[in-house]
Length: 330
Image (cartoon, rainbow, N blue to C red):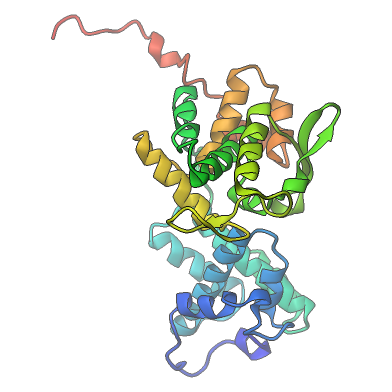
């Protein structure tokens, strides 16, 4: 992706591989070695900590590049605004559209820093507005009974069951994002002020926080580590269908599948982020202070935590439950 890639197309471009195949080539090798180290796309992806964000941004940028070539759109405010409208017409949610726009803005800033486009052009691209989302999505979470059933769903008598209990405990009990969980090392859990914590955990956008580890979560980690005979390195490890450890780490996708699989055993559709939200909801239900939940989750502002919890909307004591109306017959 050189300076010419940002110029307005003037000739119909030759057919290009599908974005997913391009992305696979870029991300297949460590360090994105299929592209030059000073390539803007490589620089963008290397600047991101989260593997999930890398995948989302990579797909968005390659999708944008293909659309721009097909539509012969310029790399400027008008071009990005046109793509924004295209994404809205496809029926994508505001959050999905805004994430894709954020990826292109980051590409513009990176290209300007590399001297591939003028700073004024990058500023114009960055001026493209997000799609406004009316209201706030509540998301999904589990009740305390469902959460209890979920963490006990894996068998405690098998090695894979012990690993999966450990994974679910970290997601529910510590409110970790799946990318944070798979990057966690055994030595990262340490003693502070007489209790177990994960100190200085680097989360989304590089924000640092310290995460308390409940005793039952630490017990799950210890049972898995003892059974797996591991004392250092990644806590969560890849395993084959025979229950043997085959990799020294676990992928975020594997955690996604793990959560969904055990969710089905309790008849609940579960994604890892639902478990992070469940942690927050249960904290609040049992008297956790809003500010402390914000710190636990690593949110940048208390308003984010309020929206996350739906604090201003009480579904347990909903006002419209007290309308005084009922069916008198039938």
